[in-house]
Amino acid sequence: MASLMDATLLKPEASRADVDALVADAAAMGCAAVCVSPSMLPLRDIPDTLRVATVVGFPSGKHHPLVKAAEARLAVDNGAEEIDMVIDIAHALAGDDGDINALISEIVTVREAVPSPVVLKVIVESALLSEAQLRTACRAAATAGADYVKTSTGFHPAGGATVEAVRIMAEEVGARSRQAVGHRVLGVKASGGIRDWDTAVAMVDAGATRLGVSAPAAILDGATA
Image 1: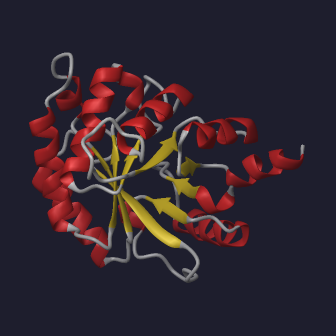
Image 2: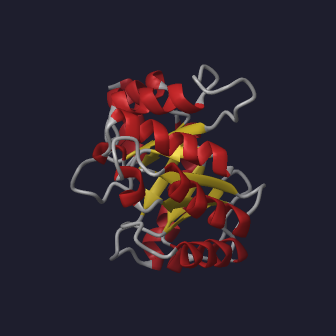
Image 3: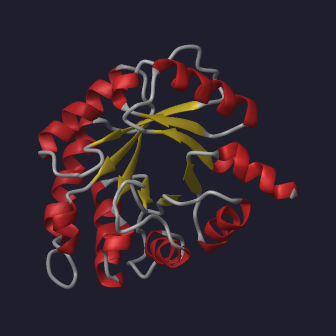
């Protein structure tokens, strides 16, 4: 389970000492990555086993796409290996099915600024979306070249990840997608409100391949509770 976790610290009041402690704890637990605010980069004393992730357009998504792209490029120049970008949620909410062209356009803008092997995760705020809108956002991310779709920032009052949202997202971008043969298979990152072992397991069972968590130790302790 630890190997699926992005140990996350995005609180505005987080200090350099807080981030250093996060890195040490995440490395000791065997987490996949640490996810921190871009102002915290570059990080110090990062072990080879731990990837560095950051956020762009966070948390509202209402930044100009070129600003998101520049923020992503600067983050990569400062050591980020994974970028979690927030889409402009209004595009996802446009009409019954969302505005797929607008979504593709902004995701492509960021993807071009940070090409592979940088990992690009697209945050869609799934709690705000209907099933049709959520599926459209996932298809846009796949078309634009993203590597993951991610449920939530964890900062929106609508809420975080749900098992049902993760199931829909995994169905839409995974190996059993309804898209045409030859579609890209993306990972699914569940984030927001995952605070205990049972919830983490439920998200993975629903199709999550990464988990964004702020308290990985508490979750892992629950495995033996």
